[in-house]
Image 1 (tube, one colour):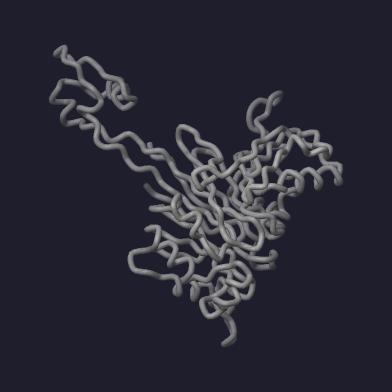
Image 2 (spheres, one colour):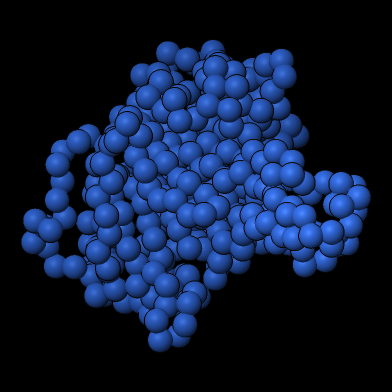
Length: 352
């Protein structure tokens, strides 16, 4: 059975939350887990308004340390701290990934506010600037619920965060005003389909033998002949690939690990007419996002992180100066690529 993978956009605004749009935060739901990408101010409210279950959140990824991607973390951690995964006596830690400085930010916020949890947390810091950072040399008091994490260094022009039998997660460097990364999530290939017609011809009825072949084991057919998986299995099916970028005006350093994705989540802070302003502030326009996506052969592009001046609903554009996010989506349209302007609580299904 193919796992459902989808994106849920909790906040699609830049700079600060507004009455109509939350600050940056995106959920990736996969295999019963939820992974959060960025956690701007007010994310805990958006989280509760969504259909995402608090107990499913296992990992949080922070692209950079600007407040509109970070200020919601302490509050969100307080919200979910009682929703423990694992056993009651040995709960699984909440894993967080982000630039060097993330652990100190969380630790300081929690210690100064006298906050303690029933669930441990672990921060894995990405040494984007290759500073040689060593957390063991940090003499600051650790939080009571903090468990040691890794320092993730650049190797082969990418940061390898972790890999499971089903998923690999990497990060690459983006150009912004602060050290910033984008994340690439790659699903492992799945086993090809069984040739059931051939199996019936070989006298193998549907049942447990099919499962053994699918899991890579050879079987002995009714006639006594050995049947190997290679004889009856089709080619492996390519896994899905998701690219979620932070703030950026230049993606060239992540291009090599981002090629051929099913979807790219890319900021479009300003419209094309404001390209000089966008680049000056380390941001992108719709055309900049689209050109990158065409270069890496993306199937779909979802725009987010809009300046609060843009409206989600065309009915709210009541004067000639008002601009709707659908206009930004039109600026990003390229032949052969799906383009969507996200809004808060919008979900995007990633089909295989």
